[in-house]
Length: 308
Image (tube, rainbow, N blue to C red; front, side, top):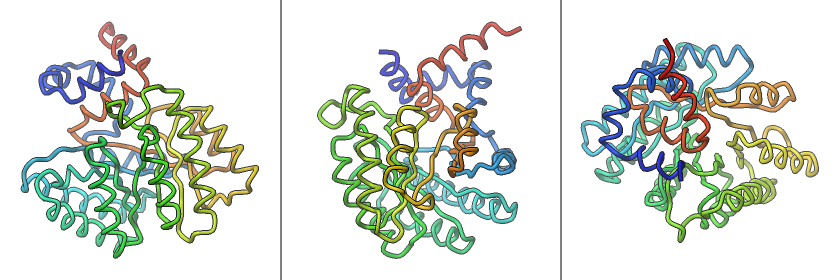
């Protein structure tokens, strides 16, 4: 019930206005957000690099409803890519298509994505398209595949809680795709997604193994295993050992500020670990979904209310 409430609040305008004006919420968000400015995010990325961790930066934002906003978000990503190259930090970029105008016009979104991918290509970088709610799954995959015809430096996210994901993973593995597999962080109807956590967990393991099997001999096939769940990680590691999966065919991805000790342990065990670090002033929906993924983090906010 708490997860459902938090997901509802992530979309509620009145809640956003209320919570973003509360000091403790800002302090709590700092645990998961790598600053409000690009300069702060670059410094976070540099520090994580120094700790032996890779990074993907997300200039937070979504559901832009006007062309001007979508073009501004595009310019922000071009600036991000330039800053990564100039600063010589090891960081890719992740983005949402609704931030780039998908809700305005698909053609606008494609135009903006091409500009970003061209800049990423010129600077030797990579872009991962985040998956949003299931209402966008088909259009997101369609845009990804259109772009993939011209750009090798683009990847896609698949959510384990959707019933359709097994078919998608199988196809993407055979296409030699870069796929980030996550559990999913949106409220979905039971006719589209597994309602029970145990079923989502089981599907996550199944999809991890399926991709690493189907894409085993396909050039370019790469899996980012995005989870903080130790059981999911242990299952992935066991499969990788048993099937001698080369370490250059996968990595583990985790969110900034969540389970840093586990991140360090995986790094020390010789695995490549990439930290997803969001930044910017549009942190509210991202932050609320992080709380929904792990409701125990709500107590972190509660404790902040009682700090002197």
